[in-house]
Image 1 (cartoon, rainbow, N blue to C red):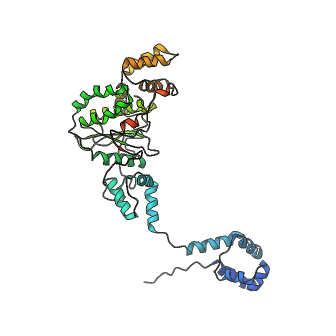
Image 2 (tube, rainbow, N blue to C red):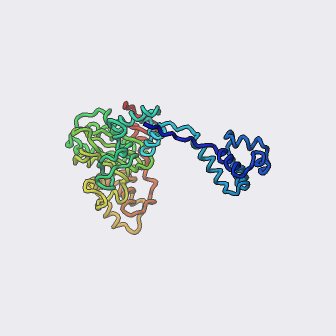
Image 3 (spheres, helix red, strand yellow):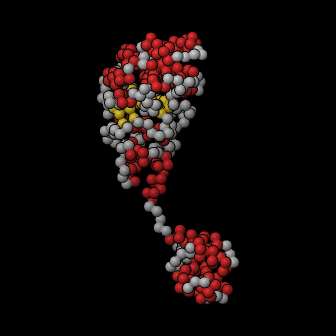
Length: 380
């Protein structure tokens, strides 16, 4: 079989010498024309020195052509001379273009190592036999309730967050789940809504019901508030991101996910709650039926939503801080929860924001937490 010879790309000097011969010029002639030493011309023609932009302009004037001709000849030669990049560059780019690899390494989810081991880690992280089987790499089907379509893949960033929750949940030991116990515990959980510090009891109470509760710091752009899924038909998991560190958002998202658990949602595919605020927190048709049910339960968890609606009708158009505080005392919840629901109903998101206190410092100290400077101990 005949071998195909790949001709090397010659340096620009090769073409300059051809042009000199065609014109009957010598190197000394060209040096005279350019106004430079003959040695300078010699090292260009021999390929020992490249053509600078200044020289390209001078040669262009000498030969009455465009300077881009010499620039392109030099660029083509330089590119041909450059060594081929390591194949791992393409592999790293492939994964980084899909998943937040650097952030996952920074957060301690995977280790910074060579590309072969990195692929092994990623396959284990996403519970796949090989890196090529990871969702988004092969466009495999993956259902979730993200509000973007029943069969549309969650974003890679959302999947990375979700699988971190799954990893951690597998390490949490709780008794067998019973929906009756969780229903019986709802009043106990409601009693915690009056004081931000009382949120520290949430993980323990959920664990006693057989629900694994995990906090994972959100990844930039994921927009996930919570997730509900099951490790098996007796092991529900609630994951939260505390994307909005506010007492009202915490209780809404938690109640939302608990309703999913009580109804057995998420047993086949994870139900991801994204942007549980505004229209996504409503009961209209912009969200699925399961989400509408969970949103309604969440809106009524701390106190009957209808009571707040009546309060707003009675007091509008003038709303005073003392009235809102009085309403909060009457329904036995923290004022920040009332303020959050009030803002959502009226669209006045600047109203009494000082009461929407942060709770992460309390809940994270009692929950299995990954992020905010803490790395959960999980082995791939």
